[in-house]
Image 1 (cartoon, rainbow, N blue to C red):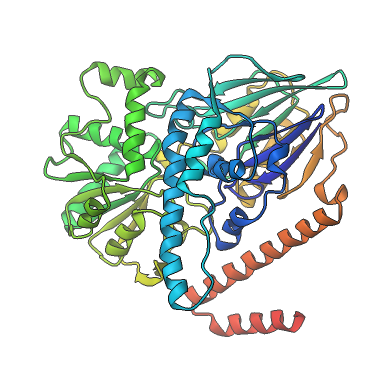
Image 2 (image 1 turned 180 degrees about the horizontal axis):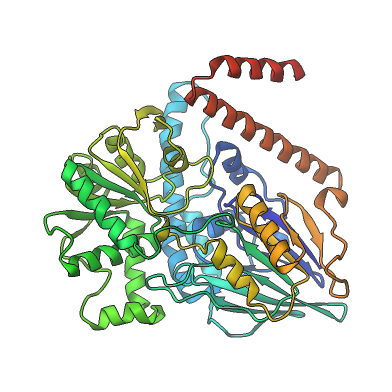
Length: 528
């Protein structure tokens, strides 16, 4: 039995883990890489596994960093089923075509500039047609139902409490008469979120593949996020500006509507403040939420039973067309605009930032994780000038953040989930996290639970053996590699070097450290 980590390895996006057992090969997730230019380049590369060799995919949830490369995989020859929960399949039907549309629009805009410059044009990673074609391969399954996928492989999906339909994957793999149980956490939610039930605790496992997004942090303001939201709204409206909220279309937008509705019911939200959802995807996702109210937690259902639907608001307006969105750029104040994408990498939010970042009276409120290298992360980290659609924009708006809206478990939540295992896993693989968060979490797991913990590199491969102890032999990818794999390892080192140089360049420019930058560049040149 083998597992190879093809994404979300020492980074947060691009989740994809390939397992081999008894002559079968399949993948957990197939996500889009987001973040720095170097990381996003992986989306355009060939898959590090032959798509035709995969028998099936198990999709943990619909977020694009877990599902966003499925259309490309299908386009290149993957013909097998994609197993997921019912709600995940419904969300994927709107999210994958939307992802393709955004890519096509961005590529079209870039190609106009490339043509004017006499340069070679580029192609989108996949098209809307590719995304639509991939949807026929989705197969919906129930939570808690044990399913035989093929000889020697069984699966059960459990509620991960992250977004609607998100799943923890339990796998039973048999090879040569030996069995292993592998648990893949997907993305784990924090407890007591609106709409979503708490994450399911798993009883036992031989190996655990666990996300680590907030492995070094605790969520702040969990108990008073509503009050903090009210303060930010009041401050922005008093200044006469707009409140711009980059929000993921699935879950985060609906959580915001929940809290805005509660403020309205309390009489603490001014009826004259217009609230816009400016994202066709978020609008469609909200409708799917309404259609799946049977998945809501008890607290949300109590709210609904009292006659206050958390997704309906008297002063709520939907911006459906591109023309509607453009009209919002003319609004100068006393408006709340919730738009996607959540990391500010694409979509309509970039236009709203372009028209509001330079205005001191406006506020940009971040309510979700911002991956390293994204526009959202740059703004949150305090950069004073950012580039949007090839134009430099000065950051003068107030930049605020409410971490309590995160749909990821924090360090305490991750540790609580892991400590609920009755038996001791042989090994824990930490994925879906930046290196600092992963190192902190790994040290804590070792200290408090004495579990063998691994932080895989991109493209590393490990041998899983049911008969070994927690010290079983691990075969990193580069030790079992061919010449091709050695080339891939060199490619990864090259990408890491470029990322470090780019980060140093950004820090030098921001801090006016030009002499230090020139000295560093001269040293690099001497090696070339």
